[in-house]
Amino acid sequence: MVTKWTCLVLLIFQVATASGQDIIPLRNPSMEALPGPGKTPPFWHFCGPPQETPPDVHPSGAFGIQKKAAHGQTYIGLVVRDNGTTEKISQRLETPLIAGQTYRFQCYVARPEIYRSISRSTMQPDSFTRAIRLRLWGVQHCEKMLLLGSTPLITNTEWQLYHFEFTPNQTINGIMFEAWYDTDETYYNGGIFLDLVSPIYKTTQSAIHTPSIPALSDAESLKSFIYQETQKIKLTKADLLHKEFIIDSDSCYYFTPLPLWDIGRMLSKSAKVKIHVAATSKMAQYQEEVITEALQLGGLPSFRIKWHKLKKPPKGKRWMASDPRQQIFIGLSGL
Image 1 (cartoon, helix red, strand yellow):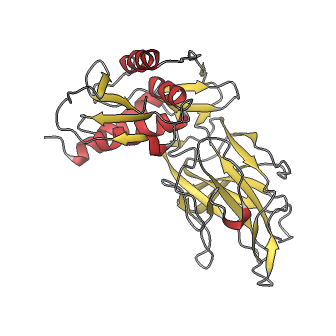
Image 2 (tube, rainbow, N blue to C red; image 1 turned 180 degrees about the vertical axis):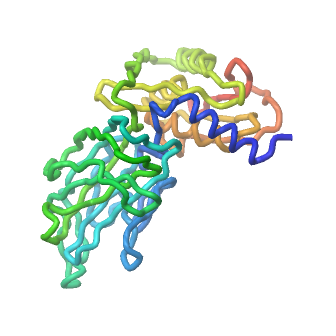
């Protein structure tokens, strides 16, 4: 019998050995969540003051915001306020940043064109569109340990990719994104949008370039593509998914199972096709998270990913493909 502790040890071992601390992925890097005000995307932690509400997941129509995501379906908005409070979110790293090592990562940011809310100083409606900065901190939970980087004032209203490079002088176990003012002395209302944060990676780490996917026009060709990609899925001896470090044509980085990412890219081109997935691995909960994230990073919305719980390998017309070890089964509907 495999216990929860055994699974946890296997997971930590797989992350530490597969990435070798050269690549440190972040969970839910595309900020996918149900849109709405006062909430934080899954796997991200709200670090703001308790008297203030959490950040907002957009676009829900709240605050007048309708802007489309840079990637996937949603993104997060962070604001600074005229009472000196700021919004920030953090995440614990799967493996720590090492002192003396140089790392990079990228994220999409934009300045809001519309962001209507209430001033904390006057309690009157105000605009939160004034340009601000995005700061990156090394943290212990929400406690600031080391400032790793800061963007210039974000004046662009279209999504742009911003790059960070830093060399910590101490071990860092978590990172935090913080909205910040133009200067430390002047408080005002402003905002920033954040989407698709890359893995953190050593500057010496190389990535594979985005493989091309064919233009398919019929159901049989699509089924054939899905079958071929599913056959490429690799699992470790512990039944954990093998991940690749990928760079796409927009210089965005991903650390995810490449065949599943390609399947997500292909299915995102259709507005109707849904993917059905079942994992028979003993670590099905972890597998589900990794597989869902890979498909989402490929561009497939979560509502088109349907999970099935199975105790043994499934049968039937729905299940058209599986990985070579028959741990992950995939089917399609809506063709």
